Length: 277
Image (cartoon, rainbow, N blue to C red; front, side, top):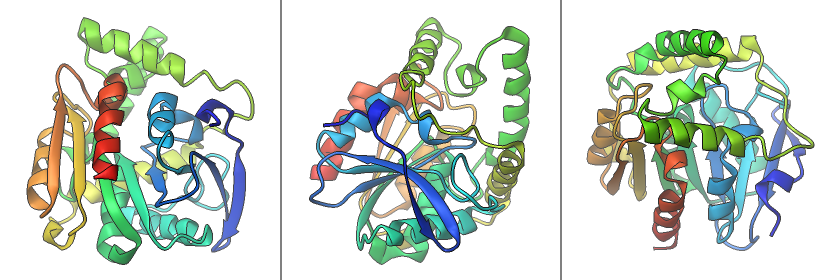
C-alpha cells in the first residue's frame, strides 16, 4: 500500500472547479472522504491517521474550492462548502461514502448529512461542533491570537491551537508537526489569505446560526475530541453525540483540538472498529 506521504496528487474537474485530491487504500467497499480543517490543505492531514484508516479502507483527501491546489473562490458559508464537497464526491462516481470531518470539516460533514443523507453511510466528527455551538464564534479571535503567539515564539500556531500546554501536549504537538513534513515532494500549495479569510467568515456564521435539528442525522456517528479543546470547546462534542440518534463519544485526556492526532493510534483503532461494525 502506498503511504500518504507518497500518494500522488490528482485533479478532477466538476462544477467549474479543478479539485486536487489524493487517494490510497484498498479499492473495494465504501470510501472514507476526509474533510479538512480551517486553513488545511492536503499536506495538513496526519499521515499516521490517513495510513491507519487506509490500511483497511479507501481514503480520499481533497482541497475544497479555492483551497490549496484546487481552483475557484472559497465560499463564505459551511453550506456552500458542503455543496462543493458533494460535487467533488459525485464527480468521482460514488453513490455512498463515509465522511471524516475534522474541525471545520466536521461542520461540512454535518451539512452534507443533512442535505444529502442518501450519500452518507457513516460519519466521524472530530474536534468539531454543531451550528450555534458554544464558543465557535470565537474561532477567528483565537486563530489570530495564536498566530501572533506563533510568530513571537517562532512556532507553528497549531502548537497552541491544537495541543495543550502541558508537557504531553507540547511533545505531541512537536511530533505531529514533524509528521506533517514527512512528505518532501509534490507538496500542496498553502492556503491563500483570501481563502483563509473566507473560511473564518464561514465558521463565524456557523457559530452564530440557530441550532439545527440533528435528530434528522440517522447514520451512525462517532464523535471524538480532546478534553481541553480551545478552538471548538469540548462540550460541543458531547452535545453533538447526545443530539444525533446514533452517536457515540470518545474524549482523550490531556489533549486539545488535535486530540485525534495526539492519540492517533487509539483513534485509528476506534475509527476502524466503528467503520467495520
